[in-house]
Image 1 (cartoon, rainbow over the protein chains, first blue to last red):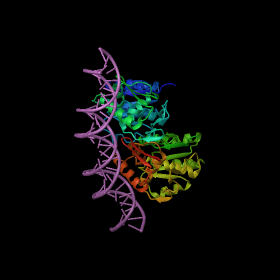
Image 2: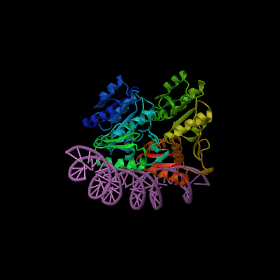
Image 3: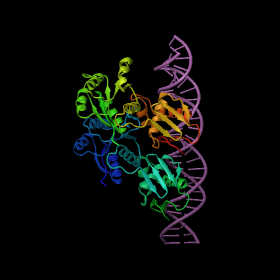
Image 4: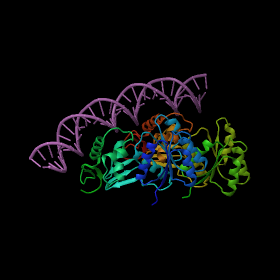
Length: 228
Length: 228
DNA sequence: TCGGATCCTCAGCCAACTCCCAGAATCTGG
DNA sequence: CCAGATTCTGGGAGTTGGCTGAGGATCCGA
């Protein structure tokens, strides 16, 4: 299947390259721009499946880019990136057309999850399935619900995000650094110890009996898979 | 099933694009126009299942557009959008032909509900079901009545609209921003705190005993579903 | 004009959550 | 088998988010 094309527009170099890497990792076909004009130009040639727009940008801000897209008849769904202080009132009305927004700082998995949710809702491009599965463990992203063997399991936001990341990468071993980078906010200052703690929480809540699903690979990281 | 085709005529760019997004989100096939002449032109080619007409427009106003539609023999049902100061009696005469009207500002769910009600009444196009159900909780949109376990429950207008939105999306988690955008008037300036208050009202009126139907998903939003 | 219903804000409370730490347990190379 | 490295776990401090009740403003029908 062809990957969904995502246009990423952010003037901050560091953040942009980080997001670009993360989205590529998740098999999106990413094109990034450091300003709105270039993105709009390119959009006249190639219509992306979705656009990620930073709100705070010099010259054209994210809202203005979106407005111009709309007046040109481009019905590309948008995910906005906003700072904490210009939330709420400025944001009002964004979720109407299936668009969404994220408040900085956010985690990369959060961004990917929102992008997929929007693609699913708008039916544009190729969206991933909302339901992840591993043996009798099921995670439904639309319902934000996790069940094990039919039983519903209550997870905190961080536990939920961590589990989703593990399930998206089941079979693959993930280092603590990788997990930190994807599941925790990108400005998080702590070390990998927090990952051990949360893996512990998950084990207690959904991996008490055999066969275990969460495995420690000593010196490397963790992985989610059946057997053993 | 094919979606109902809705013509939207409003000269205000901002409102028009907002309504277009909202109606598309609800799976209507929307075509929007910033003036009555273009809409009338297009109507000679494609007959929509319904037309949403802003009353206050330069050149041809909404009433005039409707009058010309009728003289041309087009029996398309109409929903008018009016400002508060337009007199009631002028409007009332218009609702005779199965048409309806909304006073600005209104909420998007209100508009969608009216459109569906008119489509149901006139039998034009494909209308959604008037009755929503979740376990022993029933909402009948035609009768504007809510019952739980057979008992009728009295709700204020806002409570009713919120419940309908939750029921239309049962199983899916809705963020406070989404709820605010869809259930509250589009010019509402407050924050998500009001949603908490009204969720509280609903819980007291119809979700006092187990099993709960309204669930809080901390850090994400609310959802209506059975069990837990 | 009056009274009740409704809408909305706000502040205080409480439970849930995040994160860190330190000691216990486990693993591994020599 | 020992020692060092790594991981696990429980406790707990500090923060956040959601719930609730009180109360003021507004609307609306009698």
